Image (cartoon, rainbow, N blue to C red; front, side, top):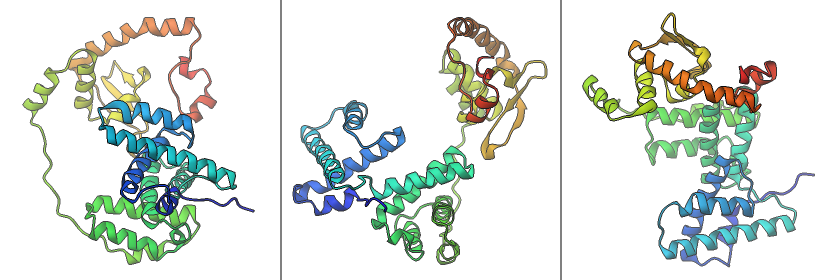
Length: 308
């Protein structure tokens, strides 16, 4: 027998403990809290609410009335959680359940983390728009939401395609249903291409000249190689071929590897950074600390690779 689930949004609309003029503020704050909590991987507990208050709410000055209303919103939700558990219900909202299901199935399918995040975000938006767990399984409801994104929110053509792919993945891989109806009933709106703002070579050099230390070296490395930020952050010493002046990039877009040139103008700076990091590496080895972060597959296959 499955445990009944509930949704705080629906119960908030029906709650007699919340004045009508506060419902909008409550929903805004709790939606913010839910997104922050899910991104952090935290469950709906009092400790998560305390972290949210310190790390998100109190990071900038707020009006006194805002803090009062937001505090009451969190207190209402924590009390709602206690009541749900008292009556044997699961206190998770429909968007959160959909997001979790998409992330789990995306991981089993081998989707990249960024793709899982995008898909789960749009499916969660679909759940929040619909608000009914049964209706989300109706193939005629999905096209209505997608059409609203096209006609009302007027998303760009590329964003519309991401939303469509997200819903197709949800129906096909999460629900096990044929998604053909969704694809046929949705008419994406073409948008005219916009001219991008591109800095000239001189403007780029001016920006780089304002940077200092290793951050300037990293920026020059990214500019000279065309790497994405995620690729830059994942670089290791073994990826540098100092003799050939080449750089190996692993697991780039589409999970593909490629080789690019190593700019000669910063080669000496990179070697200096390498030599400066060596004492820290030796200290970590002497104290038997963990090495660099590896993917789960590599960590299992080569247990000592993170320290080499």
